[in-house]
Image 1 (cartoon, rainbow, N blue to C red):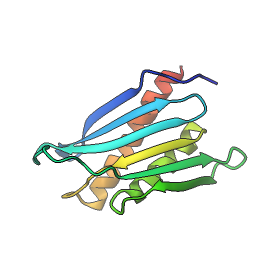
Image 2: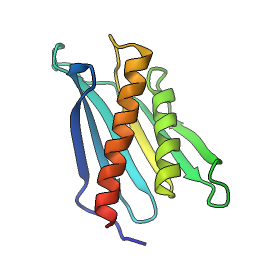
Image 3: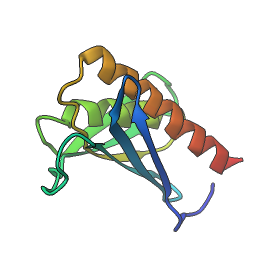
Length: 135
């Protein structure tokens, strides 16, 4: 097993169909778990106010059964808890190790389909970076 990394992986890209809305991820492999922080920035809105802290979720895979992912919210914010929980479960399943996900995503002005498309792209990009680091 690889040890902790003091060089986090930072990812940033515009969301599909919303080039003004940027996705940002900060991923820190910590040896026995991974810490991921997610947020969005909107180029159309003033960035003078601080974004809310959001939700923080822990997810752990069941290594005997791929379908079972145990998760628990550690801090909740109504607007981001579902996204944080889904992301934590998907990443824990794919990385096959415990994951902490902090999430202060804001998808105001997008449809559910656009949010899910962004989720898919985000998972793909996070896993691509993860796999590159592991090889």
